[in-house]
Length: 288
Image 1: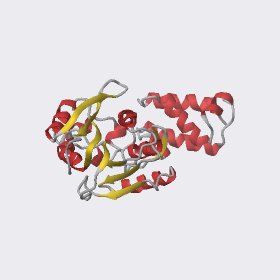
Image 2: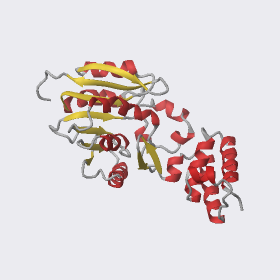
Image 3: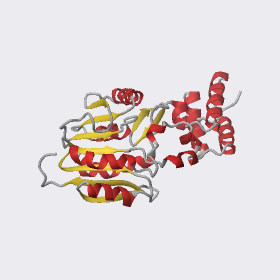
Image 4: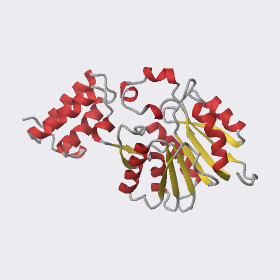
């Protein structure tokens, strides 16, 4: 039999040898899941013995993670902002960089304000649901081309008790929206240049849905389509926020300016890399 602290140390060493980023954190999360304990339990009762079944589960988890399977796929969940999401191989694993969208959006919409938002390429529902959880008077629509991704997003909305304020649509970006208009449009579209995907970390390259990664030859295909369409479905004075690759700021800003957006600017993520392009639809415009 082994105890919690020994299991944590052994697992950490295995993951470190496999080249996993943050091996101690990942080992701790998988130990908590396998042994049914909290982080506090590990710290306050480190010599608690594990059952053979718990150890076998942990060994399985660690083996998968050492093979560079994302921890979110192993555990089936991932924290994002202040919410916990179910995650499957059908959706992009939510990343801390994407939380930069909320850093920009939430200050623009006071807590009691009622507004309508649209999330294009909603995936797991991370951005849409994190914003709705923070803004109880808001309602939102999530669109995705993947019916499997939409199933995950719907499950997450129900688990978070947000399904009465979140709707979902299977479709190709804005194609099925007609004359609908929104106060806020957000998107984390595919922006990796096609030829760069094979250079990504194994967790991303081998396990994330390629549809959510591949941005075409220069990584900008989605933005070329989205810039005019986002401006079309925004209400006059409405805000948009899109995630970008760290070297795409100038190109994406230019696309939105060409589409007629006002006050276009780029915000950096916590790693001080360009991450979110935002702007407004001219409030003097009438109609779409």
